[in-house]
Length: 132
Ligand code: H2B
Image 1 (cartoon, rainbow, N blue to C red):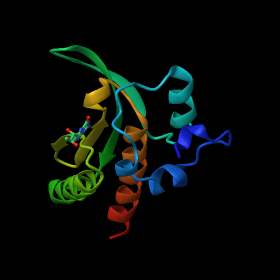
Image 2 (image 1 turned 45 degrees about the vertical axis):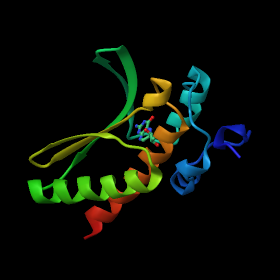
Image 3 (image 1 turned 180 degrees about the horizontal axis):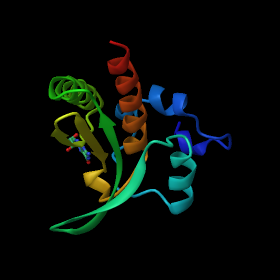
């Protein structure tokens, strides 16, 4: 069942525990109301537009800070492993002490539930990396 079909508020936990592989292929972007409902569960993430060859696409992005390059790279690798397991892949911009993670769904040319599910999973990976 889709997270969005419930009338209750969407929680971060529900997103983090959802599995992208259980969802049908996304061909349609979320509506503005759906975006707002999902975004309230992910306060650290911003919706931005990025320009590319096929026009402009909405992306869900978070800047994740670290104390050095190696920690940022370890985090990026953990994100990559999660992305492969979910069959949904982010843009990662890595620099000293920083990994910017951006999600969008290529097949829908914009944002879908998959992006919010993976963003919530990234939050979990970030918390885990800060505990070690
Ligand atoms: N990642 C993202 N971000 N968007 C997609 O539409 C997408 C993906 N599609 N990863 C997946 C892979 C698809 O190409 C494969 C065939 O499952």
